[in-house]
Length: 89
Image 1: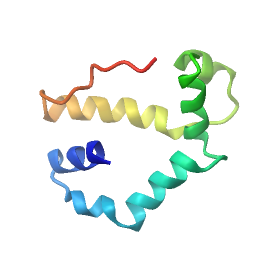
Image 2: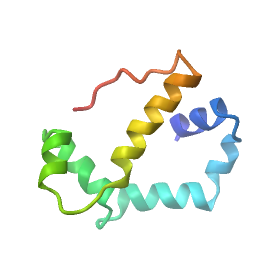
Image 3: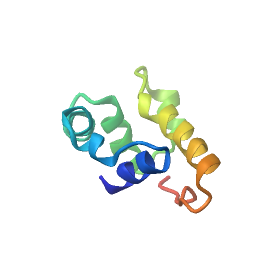
Image 4: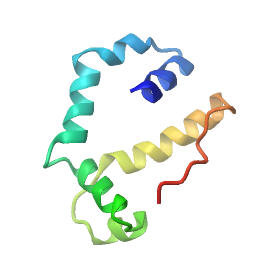
């Protein structure tokens, strides 16, 4: 997606790298795989549960939660114009 390519570019990466099998395959697996912990976390979040409630009630780890928080901090440190203030929960 364009957001991922923009972050890669801001951090010195090549956006085209993310269009390859590793980038696209991981994204598709996470977004569309019915067993994806990250996807299931997002579905619950979209239904109105809070991050804290989901984390407290889940026995599985959705790696994307900590990754997204770390990514937001990284983006803030390198690009003050990037919108990390948007709220989804």
